[in-house]
Length: 347
Image (cartoon, rainbow, N blue to C red):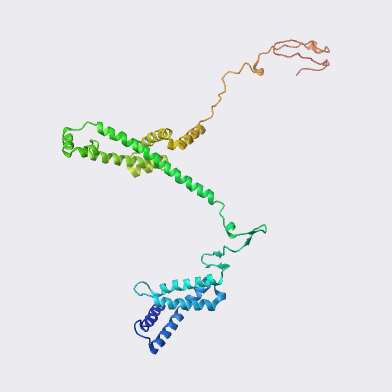
């Protein structure tokens, strides 16, 4: 403990020693109590100044000091040395008195402690909006995104519940198949005799199956449930699941593939999961690639630019004539050639 803490403990002990509960207090005891109390206030004066500044009561310094003195007096009366030190106990008393004083003095607007950098505003006050209209603080502190966050959280909660129910239905299906397989498994005669000795109650409870086999089946189902939940509905990798569960990656892949198919069938058959099944169908349609149109190897003969046309050569003598009679050919329109001067040459 520090020197101040030791001095405070000594002064508080002096106050308690000179304050008898069963007998009246003498004059000497009153003097000793006053001296010890003054010593306590002197020792915690820096702490009182710090709290007054922290609670924004510098403008009401005298009232704040009086409240702190009352807090110290109450702390001494209620102090129990076995539970805590006086320095810790008196801090909360001082803070409580200063908080109460601040509430009494600043009824309209109370600046809070600098440590949290916040401002306490009265709900009865009227504020002005950026447009100059009066509006209540309730409208100012309204959270516009609260509804969206609430709906998103509710959707996540419902989705998690639906996923758990779907996985439970799948695990129940696996349990029925496993129990039926164990029931049909041939057992040695010694096991049959042991089950007969146990009585009909055990045979009825375990369906005539060895309880050890049922425990192994439940352990396997618990492992498969974890794999399906983390691989199908979460982002766990094959390496992580193989390391944590002790199952090979190929076996994990087989379990998840079989589970995905069975869960899709359960969702399609059970009306509770109709929405999930419908969403899965829509997602599958979106994932289907668009049909691609492959270009044929041979050109399309029906297109105009692929039709065959006859080519006719023109004698240069005919170019000197004013015009050439139209030549009709299949797929070629009539051509009119303007008169070309004799000096024109073909390039």
